[in-house]
Length: 318
Image (cartoon, rainbow, N blue to C red; front, side):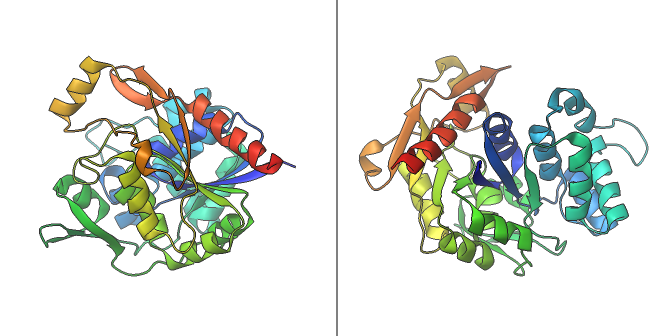
């Protein structure tokens, strides 16, 4: 029987990780943050009173066994003068499926059969009232994930305007897991939105699974400026319950200097320094994990998938 891996996250980080992990013999449950409120997703939330679909769409594409066939279609964004302008095909398809089936979870299950998914996709909540809030270092409060990202201020604390009702499927998946993975991605707006739910923290504490973190390659302005690898771990542990991160996967590969300089000057992003001397309390897995594609740093998804699978095998052996 395949080991059960639960991955928590959102944004492109989660979908990138899943593209590689699905090639290994594990049972995947992807729990997706649903508090995005920008662009097409924000418009659909307001019009149809539903949770955010953008990150769910990306995860569906990533886990599809027919990924290369549907990728360009589901991610196609209309450019027109009508109300369709800015919407993606996948977002509209998810909205339709949720409307027909009664809620987003049932809509996802119906589309999963069509897309031949290698795993389960679970929205964190069905509650469209879910609103992410941020207390900034300067004392200001910003409402909404989109506005938090645009603020470019140092974040002191993330919380919900109102505690959302967490999916029972998400709670069960975590309790039954053999490994819980916190995906790379925007820590404050993709990863922590899962962890600030009391029911999620309780489920993690009750699970027999270890908690693993896939560390980001570069920092993010306003979220993780000047933060080392150990700083990422400390931040996430501060939002977890009794169970803390036991193992981390980190990049050790030297980064292309010209491309890194572009990141530093144009996006104010720096390489995340692997300070192993401050990580003695967790198991450190390090490898050359960078792929440079079209002028962008990306994780090598196949290597990430291999290390996750290998950890599960070694844990079983131990």
